[in-house]
Image 1 (tube, rainbow, N blue to C red):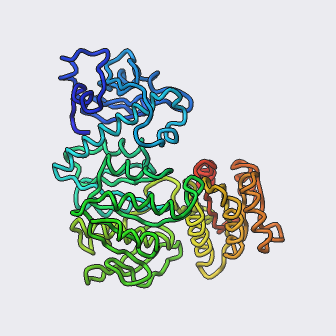
Image 2 (cartoon, rainbow, N blue to C red):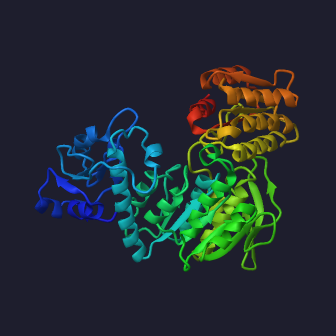
Image 3 (tube, helix red, strand yellow):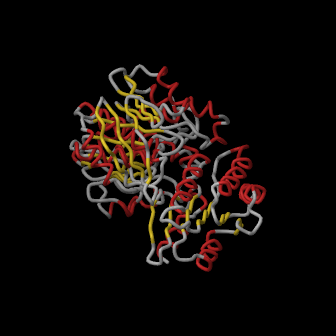
Length: 493
């Protein structure tokens, strides 16, 4: 973060000083990182006290200062130098309830709102100094695209991007506050559970370049319809000023329509037809890494991706479009993409063990679109090398699909059969997972190819007993299913 005194922070967030005099607060400066995990605090840092599932961050304020923090942003005095904001209802949105499920007294909402104000002030100052903010949204592919954008911008200057999926009302301002005067590009994911969420995030860090990837069915249970999801995703291009750029994946009709909802210049991206930035014929290698010709501004550049799955082509095209807007050449983009492997955990990490078993770890997130992409990659990889390898799809629940949950899980079970996956291991015994298993059986899995197990431990025991050298295993589910540790155990076996 840019260096600010505790007095300046109190003024920005509308807080009061506690356990420090006004004179000392004026000269006590935050020069380190801003952290909400007391274990991550560094010298000169600022600790953010938030309520959690097992503990309240206020209880760790003294430990954070002992570890080097110069102050705390809190909702009550904590016995060490602090900026205190009064508990209140979250401002303009109810998302604090989803981000801070254990905020029973409004203290978390108050701190979260103060954090947003601090991040907005810092972002405004850095933009005035030349910082470029890139915002990315979409129903799927945000994190993969964020990682690719960070990779293609790295040759052009210093880049700050969040680890994993720090894309909500806590993760986004935290990421903004990692930027300094030396940062050239700030790459941000923007997610939503309710209408207005993306608009609120964009007010914290207004992007000059926005990317919209797709409108799918992730969080359908929260929004109720794909149309409502599209309206919320459109909040990002609507937030870009007329001097900015909006990059749209026009292979998605709902995204293409957003060109009418922004005053910014629009760059259209496609892997299916000629556009401002588009891909020629796509081919895949044995590990489903795509190759294609990048077409942009009349120049053709051959690109080979280091990430896995044909669905990554659209993500890479959007990343390329961002880099080209920032002054990169086609050759620079191709070189960066060739080196940009999976950067965030549990997202299409492909590992081949010493015994020849290949594990595709895509266990962090799942929705119907990304499930199909993962299954197609599994099927492709199993068919390479001249002899079809046994393929295993180890699938957990897709969360937040609302009333479509049963039908969508049934559909994925059927798709696994249609793609000729050798074995389907359905992890979980609830109604949705029963529907996935039932769909596979009804589609034609009569010989025990589809199996239900109670949990990740049972799935691991089955796989350890039955995997053979050369098998290919996809592990995929929403993060709440906890299949990440299953994938890690398979890789380590």
